[in-house]
Picture (cartoon, rainbow, N blue to C red):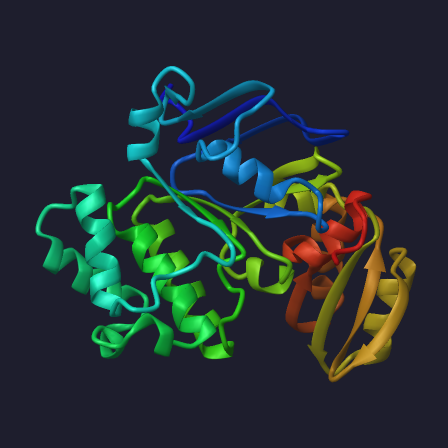
Length: 308
């Protein structure tokens, strides 16, 4: 079996009087985009800093593509890109000069070509000659992302990358992350905006007080939920549909246009059976959507505290 692209085993990080990360184990495979979720102070940033080698661990093992952090730090870091939240830029350099500085440090071949590619990927081509001090907060965030992409790392650690981005920038970020996923990059990304993570993450890991509460694919976590919220819409047969839903145990029904939302305590097989019953009974279902892929619902049922 190939090595997981990112493997964290029994990681612990202590600060004076505080256990920041407590016995954390997490595996992320090649091509996964895993959302790291938790309240402020849950240990997300400390985890990322430790994986990147910027923070020393108390104990535990970190591997990237089979290369261990303490014994092979150079091999690990060559495969890893870390984008911290609120990363500073050099105000008196242009965007191109800023990237060229890091491209030289990374020993990136054909620097000019790679810089142009990363500027295009992060929608900054038109700002290539602008001074960093002239860039907006969101543009600076995108520039740091471009810097992180320069050496073409296999694993990306992105700490709140959408911070400071306007709505259009967030849409473009989602597109970029989907592109990275399609080419097999591995991404561990933290964010407080759970609805955005739902658009591109195929896995999630929920932390609270330094510990991992739950992790898995979005589908697995959704199936583990109880009382999930569902939405169904139909053409005609409204009263008959409501009768069938109530008979199957649906609760807290709320009317929406041409349908309802409801809570359902059954598992995935029970949901499949309910949909089949509706169709067999002549209900013309036009939409059937569950909260199994809704990270907000998964988070709320995980037992972790409210996002801050």
